[in-house]
Amino acid sequence: MGALDELSPREISVLLRGEPEKIAAWTVQWGARRLALYVAVIVVGAGFYGARWVGGVTATGAYVAIKFPLIILLTTVGNALLKRHARRRCWV
Image (cartoon, rainbow, N blue to C red; front, side, top):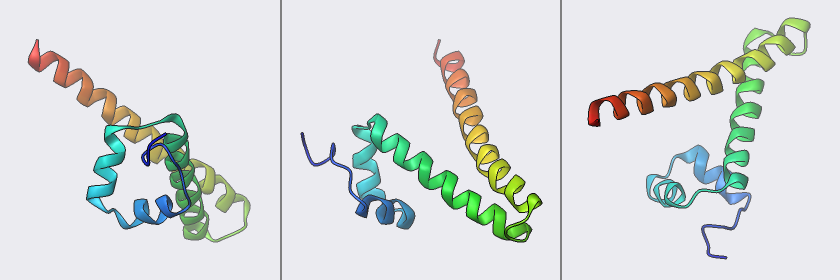
């Protein structure tokens, strides 16, 4: 296993800082564990932001804490699918 296959808590800080060289190296060799880590960071971060934005620990805050990460992830997936579709139609 190479250095790119190993996961560590330091990767979260690198991801949040957005260091382009390291992130570019990760995209060359991606794995399911790394993808799960990134999705977890997005869900937790967006959930905390959504709950705090609405007003903390309330029913509405819990609703937004669930809804906001889903909106971000579904928008990202939809955008990726549209780009893939457009790229295939342009090059064929």
